[in-house]
Length: 88
Image 1 (cartoon, helix red, strand yellow):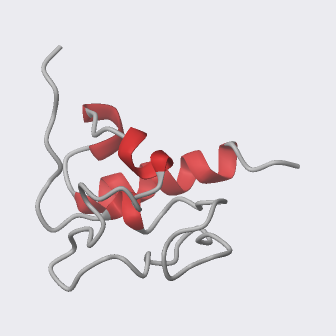
Image 2 (spheres, helix red, strand yellow; image 1 turned 135 degrees about the vertical axis):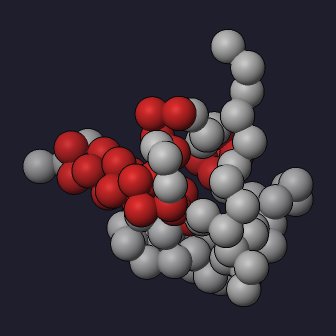
């Protein structure tokens, strides 16, 4: 299967999921539904390709299932995954 590229102007993966580890500018991590402080005005990642980028961010790869047909589909899918994987 061919690798997908991120949809320009989406950034759903930088908003919908929580990140429990530290991020530069967010030392306690990022709550679900809150945009990452490293999200740029054009919805890119200020840390992309840099060593400070958290491993969880670099490990999350776009897929047809996750990204859906548009940004709203991606936000919805990731928000649902967040709920389904939340510790009790």
